[in-house]
Image (cartoon, rainbow, N blue to C red):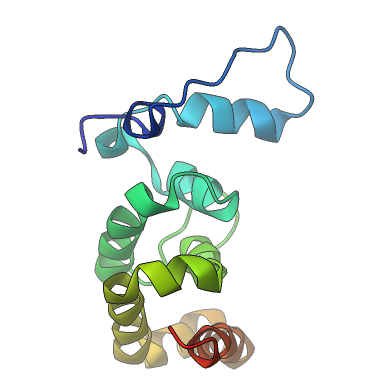
Length: 137
């Protein structure tokens, strides 16, 4: 699976536009063509944030967060964590094992998140998790 791209795994090949309406759409188009094993933290963060290929990327994202809970793409420290914490409840309902792994990562790294990203960010992440839990995951 890691040697395939999102577009191969989904068997969904987007048509190349002569000109993309935004830089973001062009990036998503290009990132979907990259093998999962070759995606950077930034590319994973952006695709997850755009809700593209989450089912293929969540395992990779969780491994990166396990290595460094405040892994950074191109925006700020912890931007991958922020994107994962904003994954819709509907996804977590279908992927309970991954949700449990994510919750464990947060508990395990609570102090580091608080120190590195601040107490307010930790509270926001915990609130998102609680909101997902209340939807009976």
